[in-house]
Length: 359
Image (cartoon, rainbow, N blue to C red; front, side):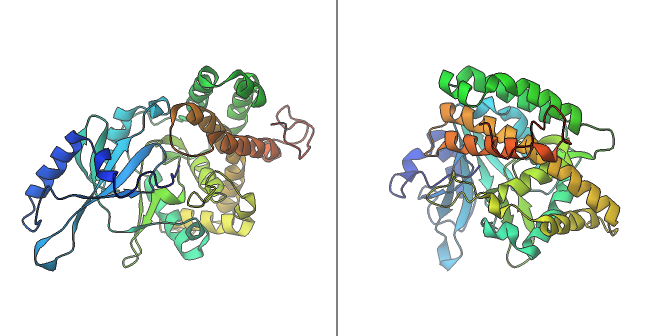
């Protein structure tokens, strides 16, 4: 998720740990065009909400463009969401595959990364048809990567693990409001209804919002970054999560407010799926497109449930200025409203068909 700017330019350098500065000085000393390896310009960036992210600049001699790297400082308490060593392994493996930035150094609570000379997408970019087509093709390439670790679906275990963490951390009134005592059954029903042998399983990003996608304006190449939540999952789930993120704009004064009028309509979803399936070189049939669009809509429910739990947990482990509980409330409301997309009427998960959320 994306954060608002958290530091002023004046005190940003004080946020960089000594261990990180030693790595930065060592890197810069190897570049002959850097005027002063210890003269750091530290610029806070709007980065992932689980981290603090800084751009580090050095002035160069002879009027050359400045040297740049990225410093990522891990957020405290967020290891409840993922294993940091697994995430580092994913990052290094992605680099070997030619995906994303290179790892330049590690320190106890963070790392130094290659700076990608591209811009981060904005929320409106996700709805741009040309950019969306580039994202679809890149996501297909991402899903086809051969990555280490268990190549089995991780979604359901993650939901249960996050539910346990939410129950452990939240206040009694929060547990009551979000009816956490009922979520285990909801997860079981979802898993039963959504799992199937015919589904395509791939290496999924699982957090494909605009802040995790970059584009080089000259080459029109897209890079997917930040792999904290990446794992094997149904590709339909990953695309569903991407569609759900189109309701968000984390660069506003109210980044926690979601607008589901911005959720892509049927033609937008169909166009994205067609581009995704056809990017391998073979034109996708209408049947395959329609089936994947159908599966994606079902998985939106799992996305809402997962990130609703994320919001509850984050309220208690993250110090970033963000209304996590209101964010969680909106995701749970959408989960309730979209149950009918998962099951037919009369199913225990579909309730009475009312459009009124119970959260």
